[in-house]
Length: 519
Image (tube, rainbow, N blue to C red; front, side, top):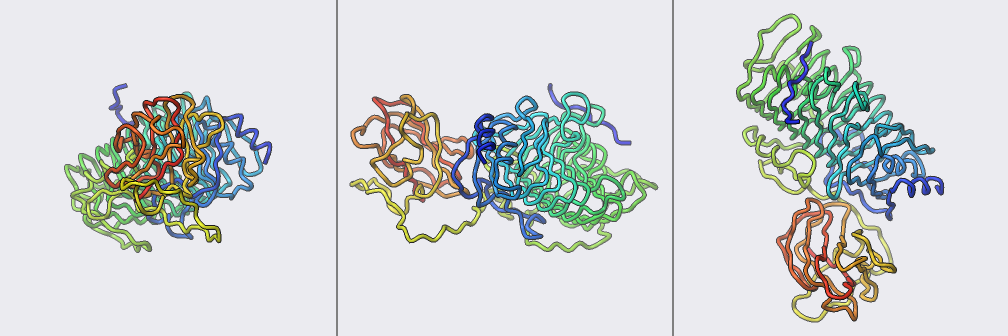
């Protein structure tokens, strides 16, 4: 039996009506808010694109997430749900509809497809409430924190799994998430990332899994061997007793992960499973690879790994560690392209990229951290010329393509009769005003976009009203630059999916006619 982890913590119209009631905000169709593209086995079997190409919805409660799913035309209509705030039992109710099958106390992605859930703004935290994926396909979960989900005690959710998948699930990409518990089974917790009952083509990337008795499993029993084609890369497993992960049957690929304080065992390949284990860094841990707690052998192919202060137990009938000198006992063919970071730099790269709220940074495969490659998109063909704003005279006005045209926008409370969209319509006769003397308006894109210049153009008759301001990276909250007065703003070239102009002081009523952005 496995010990509990020792705690190391210091302490339709109907659908539209439902949406309105729970506070979900609907926007016009636009590209997926998720950044980058899927990697690993999630790229196979037709690929994983989530809600790309569908409507984007903002939700601040679990009920709103369910309402967004239930408000779709069908269970396969693409949708991106941008989540901000804390999702918990108190604000997560069941919502009914023909395009959904939800339940209270859990985010239920059941019998649906083509969905992206992505944390935005100040972040998304699923507190004691898990995400359950069942009989579903083409799902992306990105940039969220899920913590302290319990299977016993109070409250309970999702069988104790932070993210759990089962029953014919296909093509799931989980990226830049923080999955956390506060103990083991005796404290009421189960797995952080579990797959069972015929789940295939899944990638877990750039995520942290911490403080749990069980990291996760692939297959719920020695006979549940239909789960396969799982990739784990650039993840941090820290203070985990076992199951990092547990594999029963199938094929898995682990590369460039950092494993720290695996207290009892790590990658447990059994019941015929085959694991390819490339360029990982194992540190201060025990029995990080092998077949454990069973006589049903599993297999592995190893290369380029670092074993730093790793101890190995003696082999026995139900205990077959791969060390102290791990050697391959099978070969595993990987069908997708990937580039390996050197194992020596994995702790640094993973510390800078893994988890929610890290700006969705990734490795370039050469131990260098960078912004993710933007999701490629093809603009629609149209016979209507793209509108452009009349240029302001003077050398300070940026030249080139105004990237705000065709983008999205949002902001803080607006004055009556104004619109966020007026700052990106190419028309100097329309404008946005905050409800008071201060406020913020943003330009956003469906994928990361490089920007180095902004032009804030005031409406006629209001020139000089804008006083102090800050320009903010909407992905990370970092201040790009600050100043006073409208006009051209230059800053270091930054790849982001949202940029916010925050007015912190003004004289009179500020009116932003155009919020232009340039590469």
